[in-house]
Amino acid sequence: MAIELWNHTLLPDLILKGLFSHSPHDFFFFSLVLLASVATLAGNILLLLLIQADRRLHTPMYFFLSQLSVMDLTLMCAVVPKMAVNFLSGRKSISRGGCGAQIFLVVTVGGAECFLLAIMAYDRYVAVCSPLRYSVLMNWKVCFVLALACWAGGMADGVIDVGMVFSFPYCHSLEVDHFFCEVPALLRLSCADTSLFEDLIYACCVVMLLLPLGIIVASYIRVLMAVIKMPSTEGKQKALTTCSSHLAVVGLYYGGAIFSYMQRASARTPVGDRATSIFYTILTPVLNPLIYSLRNREVARALRKMLRKNGV
Image (cartoon, rainbow, N blue to C red; front, top):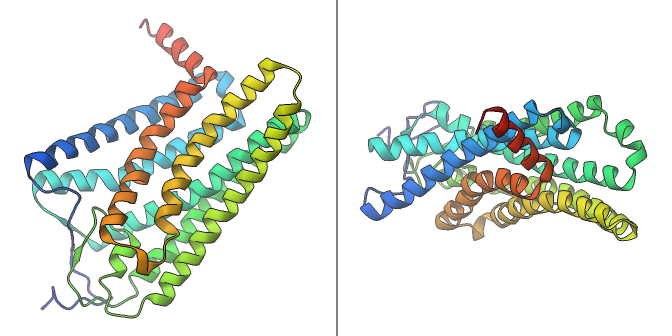
């Protein structure tokens, strides 16, 4: 009876259907996911170490980049370890506390990253369009406050989502058709009318995605206009190289996020949710450090310096 009747006062463990079964074919894809997760861990930790070790990278741009790496690591650690443990052990359960933690961390990082990418675009706008005022407009106090605001905004969204999700009564199967606890997947199990909350989520996603995206677009329009007017070819190339790395990250993140979160609840499917979730929880975090390290001369120089220092 406990499996059939689930209310907000007593919630048994949930069952995550997962991403893979135990067939040889699925084990191969699980190995790829695990390899991507290890690459995410190694790439982002290496980037954080480089930024910390090289004084030339102690600038606002790389401070914000380090925050992006922390967010990617948080997102990956919130999802992949539990998925891997369930797959390897054959158990598919997750506790109420574990489910709430996953929702909180995923929503927090998702919201914080939206705001952070907008701040990084504004940082590039100030650096290119107002270089003489850069040290005043983007001093360390401002940078810390902006980073704190990103995390605070994401956390506020996470707390609201966790509180609302677990306030609904659940009287359907406890099997969550997903590989982690995501809000839409849980709401499908509720026997209450969740349409108002789903509309609220949709409205919040529109604001949290489109408002920062508007700032990003406006910033880069101004940057592009300033770059076109630059007399120096070297200056143009440097500005475009730095900005193109950030634009590549923005394209990856917003491409998946808009496709995933700006769909109406009626248009969402479990298969579609799993596909887009793989994109922003596994693929994007592994690509972010690669984009910045491969396309950024300063990061590449810091890496070579670290390798020489360690005799490699």
